[in-house]
Image (cartoon, rainbow, N blue to C red; front, side, top):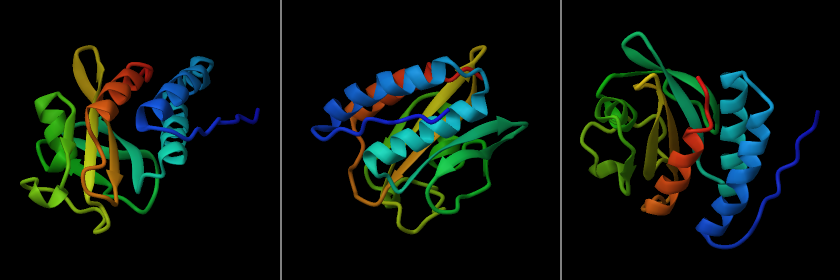
Length: 157
């Protein structure tokens, strides 16, 4: 079944307000978490034009690359390393306006300038993270955090 995404123009908040219900509706009829992560990454990537949009899944003691949109990515990230590993360790969303200023940043792409990482929880533990990179400095803020954290509640692992 083909799915259509209604891409909107406007402020960042208006874009999220239009996109979030569409993503939730798309995910509501599918129980496979990988399929849902793939569609969510594609929808976010298409609406906002981010450099990289995707997921890392916790497997044993590391994050392993999951569904994504964008250039080739790091395949594995250690616990507590880089922005993704730190969000996993600290169990909270991390917004990085300038990746060069983040201690221990892992440069999977030299084009990445700013980043947001949002953890996804299952049974009280971080089970995956959403990672989004931008080619521009300061791309992410509390608006992104609010809507992305809400969207991560829709991912059932």
